[in-house]
Image (tube, rainbow, N blue to C red; front, side):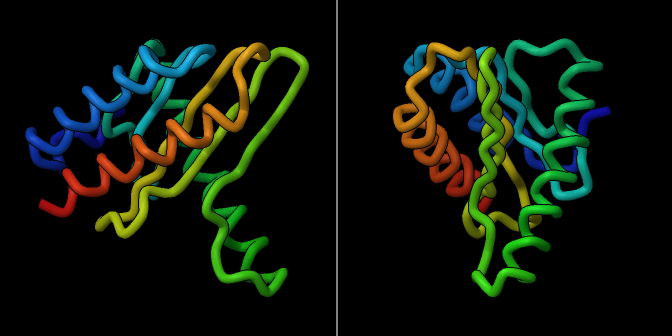
Length: 134
């Protein structure tokens, strides 16, 4: 299920283009989903419709868990979660100041450079945030 119709066409179009740019400029990126806080896909890249919906739902849950853990630990907010394995990495990060709240989930192969992935994903988030504020 997609949350796209709730958001403006221009903003979702910008988000889609940013996801495509993220994959083109960041070696190892396999897929990415922009998701709403209630777990719906807003835009996605290189995942089937069922896969995007599942990733959006799980990404939303991870964002909520990360925020709860951060509050419990006494740190202000969880800005990103990183799940690493021998076969790849998943990064879920919040879109700064997005209203309604949005997050980005990115899946990358094991050969990606984590620092490069985090830098590129953060830049993607900033551009998407701008589109959703306008």
